[in-house]
Image (cartoon, rainbow, N blue to C red; front, top):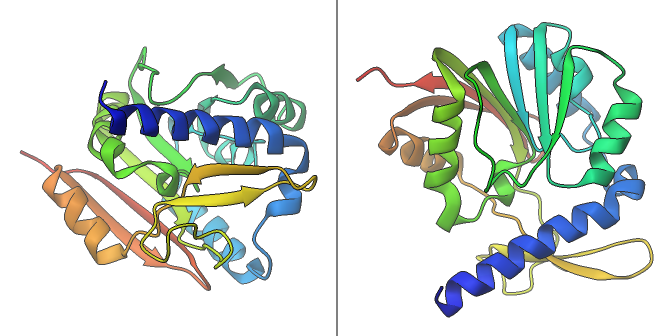
Length: 221
């Protein structure tokens, strides 16, 4: 593995370490002033109706899991942080949910799903893993499967270690400890073009503030 690959692996390991350490104070680090956007996202997801079997990538503390269950027959919720899964399992006590601890960059699907959902995860996927991540999404979907994602490009000046074009940022916990993680602010037209190149027909919608959602399917050959 070349030096760049080693550095990326260390960054991704640090990203997992951050979310493991941050699990108990997750709500303390939520975006402020996004109540309108949150309502818009919830409405958009309900209109999308993630019915059938759903794969939730990077489920975190289960913030979206319960809402997915309003429509889903079953949910497989994956996260790399056992601390996050512990919280999610305590919040979402439903036999229709299967929680799986795994690094999504190493995980392989054991079935096909009707819907793949990920909330505030795509911005943590480095450019070097973008294509392989979407290959995984495709491998996880049934032939007529659908995708719904939620994300934001919010990054503070303090977080931007290498300026506004940086894909690596600094995050601090309540005790002052610092971590380096991936956080990419993706320009929506460019995101659509990238996904079109990879064979996806995805339509994004900008919500209030820095948050957006997007949904779609694989393009027909």
